Amino acid sequence: MTGHNAPAASPGRSPDATPPSEPHSAPAAAADRTLVRAPEPTAVPDHTTVRAPDRAPDRVPDRTADRTPGWRVPVIGGRPADQRLLGGVRELAESVVAALLDRVPVYHRLPREQLTGELTRDTERRIRALAHAVRTGLPAPDEEFAAVREAAARRAEEGLPLDAVLLAHHLGLEVCWEFVTRHARDGDAADLLVLNRLLLDQLRQATTAAGAGYLDERRPTGDRRGAARQSLLTALLAGTPADEAAARAGLQLPPRYAVLCLSVADHPDEHAPGVDPGIAGRRKLRRLVTELDHRTRQSAITALTPSGGLVLVPLGPPPEARPEPRPERASGRPGTPAELPWQHLAATVAAAARAGGVPVLAAAAAAAPDEVPGAAALAYEVLDVARTFDRPPGLYRLDDVLLEYQLTRPSQARPRLAALLEPLADGGELLTTLRTHLAGGLNRRHTAGALHLHPNTVDYRLRRIAALTGLDPARPADVLRITAAIAARAAEQAPAVR
Figure 1 (tube, helix red, strand yellow):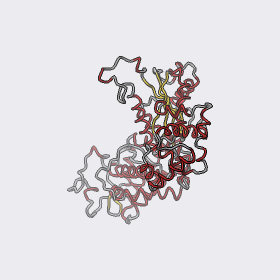
Figure 2: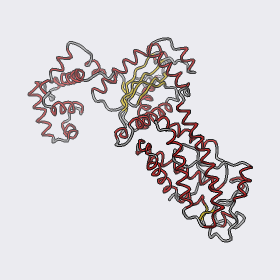
Figure 3: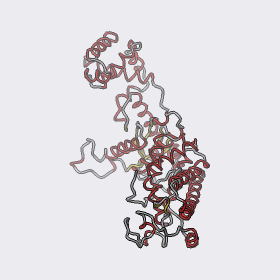
Figure 4: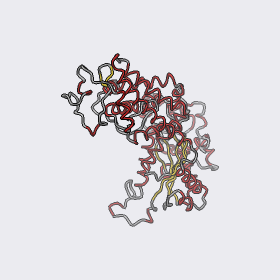
């Protein structure tokens, strides 16, 4: 069980199915509580310091600044209610999520990773916050219920109905109430009334915040900043003057944009039985976009779906327009000023992929604002080439796929090059072996390991390829023709990405 070394919870995200965190307090409410406050017990073993702070304490000494004046912690079944909550944090959190799945079936549409991860962790945090409220009688900070609003907005984005989101809050407090009171004694009535009053006050504040957050997300005019940025993106992609659209978005057009085209793989949750693939896809996309915003300091303009899309990232002037670099940095190797923005973008794409939990294949081209349409078309073509040739996830530019790009452009030679490998069409394993052998640097042991074959089997297949096509991978003169033929065949057979 989780201990209670730090009963005060820090603000953060909150799940829907967890209890709200801090009590509401007002002078009138404090006066009302005097009518139902539990009487001083004559003997409560080991817990007298909680009920009567003026006695010798065995817990952290009471400090007036840390609790409502005159507040006494309700004692249920001989144990302070806050200690009961803190002593069963893990058990309670699991019980809340289980009750949520049992009584609000729509939550089964959420990915299991979300239920056992985000919602369970936030439930534990909320329980600790509730225990802090029970211990101190202090009102909840504004940021605590701001987290409730944010969680409800996420549920709205994921398509869960409002009644399910609100019912989740009722269930969370119901489970906590049953957990704390299952050991109640006959003499605990007054303390039970105090605890009940506090929990109802928490429920009122939580459902109010959740309803507001849910409706804010549903309101179509809520994201004016996003709408203005989409208008700017539309103008840039259309090649029309974009200065006015940039001004409406509160932005200044940069000297250049890096135009990124992303292909985002499916998350395993999108194919998990019982999970709504739309919810899983939107969660993946939200994490990915959040990381992009963080890495680009919210300067990126995005038009993304769960499967990919476009991202425009501001860049500085091209290298030739900048002051001359110092001699020791004037080389063309990676790490020069000309390469640094692209290294940063590659790291950004990699970080976004990790945040989304999926591989991301991206292509990029740089252009001035009035040249964005051409750069977007080039980025799509580079992405097409990278995907056709099974390039690993990451960021690619035209320079990274020059040969493949040129070989895949339509020409009279391309079909003839592709036909060189036609004798291998009926032997799928031969073509796979040939591609793997070239990708592995013509190393037979690497090819054998990649295909889980004996090296002698690789040798046999390579001899068969030479006999069928007249192209021997062991002859340097034939390697270029084989490479070109593979590229042309892939281009002839691959459908357009767009």
